[in-house]
Length: 90
Image (cartoon, rainbow, N blue to C red):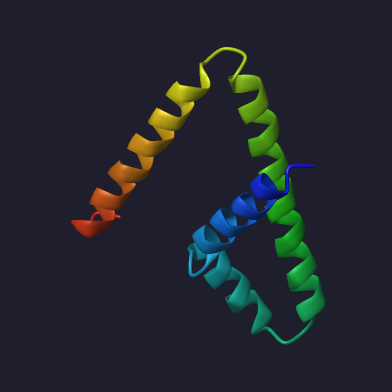
């Protein structure tokens, strides 16, 4: 296993998820007081499922689109979202 890739993926996803709408929704659900374990398991499973989809799609996508173009498209997407958030349209 590539530990450098493992830790860089963990760090990137961890930082990206901090304070986002998913975390806020999870905090909101946890305030219900009924079962924090159910909220944790549900949100953890959802993140695992979406990550699995991303890995599968990303793996298949590289069969048709060169990796450099996937990186470029993702980079442009992040830049566009950043600009939209800065100008208040996000």
